[in-house]
Amino acid sequence: MTTDSTPATSFYGLGIAPSILELIGRMKFQVPTPIQQKAIPIGIEGKDVLGIAQTGTGKTLAFGVPIIQRLLQGPGHALVLVPTRELALQVDETIHKLGQPFNIRSVILIGGMSMGPQLQGLRKPNTRVFIATPGRLIDHLERRTANLSDVKIVVLDEADRMLDMGFAPQVRRIAKYLPKERQTLFFSATMPEEILTIAAEYMKLPIRIEIARQGSAPEQITQELYIVRQDMKPTLLAKLLEEYRGSVLVFSRTKAHAKRITRTLRDLRHAVAEIHSNRSLSQRREALEGFKVGRYRVLVATDIAARGIDVKGIELVINYDLPDDADNYVHRIGRTGRAGHPGHAIAFAMPDQGGTVRDIERLIRGTLKVSTHPAMPAQGFSAASHQPTNSYGGRSRQSGHGGHRSGGSSFQRGRGQGQGQGQGQRAPWKKERRSW
Image (cartoon, rainbow, N blue to C red; front, side):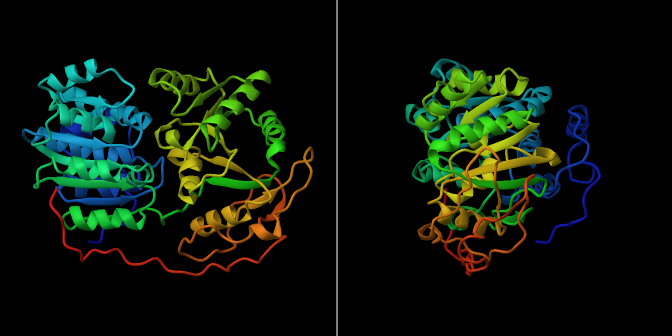
């Protein structure tokens, strides 16, 4: 199916019911984002959707509007599956605003939260939308406290993250409880082969909507890279925090690193909070809310929380540790530059991580520009580090996002650019579709 690529100037003409249009206006949404423009009409038509869009582009409203309009037309429920607690809370905010005027309630089914309020929410007759993480939903299904037999529309939000976190078996178990006749929507910032395989098996002729090339970073985000030894990272972080005045999100690879970074910054008198899986749900909510309102200027997080941080106005994202998976780099930096606003992202790479940087550059098809800091000794990548650790299709090209300092290519001291060739395989759309 070919969709109109002309940018919409309003939500009119997308097939949205007048009462919902009026509500969207009251919510101060005036111009739909590209993913909203393309996904809302298809979703309202009842067709399956495979949506690829960068983070911060309004995907929640893109599936929230079809959900509410579908439920207003008759009985039934909707299910939104998400990988993390934070994302569940974020999705619920939007669904609550859309559904409350029509007496459509949602219930959050996530771990770390008492079962009591969840059971109460499930029993209410006007609870029509389940927003759940896979593990807790399976708990309810096995206890028979949740019933998915009349679910009319299913959404998998951040589907790639769901697979990254090992939720594929749980998703398949949940699928057995769903009716065969239903509408299914997948939304994600990237679309790896495994998701395409699942889509081919379980969706009915899905319409693929690709707003941005897979792995691409938002154009409004500038990026730069520092090559720095592990023992010098705290010093560089402290120096950078002195140069930026706005909100800063710092990503760590492990919980132990996150704790250590938080402790170091607190000792330096920075207002800082941390989010990772060792923190309770109440602690994570307090940290995120404090970051939103300015009580904490710096938030330190692991990848577990990357997809659930929806805070507008983050000035800077710092990859204190490079992610294990290059896809996560795109998701991390997508926390800044949201809703069309400018943003900046900085990555710290150790001298032996040239291959990891190369993987990221192959994915984003760009060059991370190396910067140096006058207070830090200059470093370069070691000769043995240039071999990429993974293979991502595509060709590297010299169209990097420059930082605010002068610098050169991340491989100016090593192997030349444009070495990585390769084409991704076509999605297996011809496979026999299984029944959910």
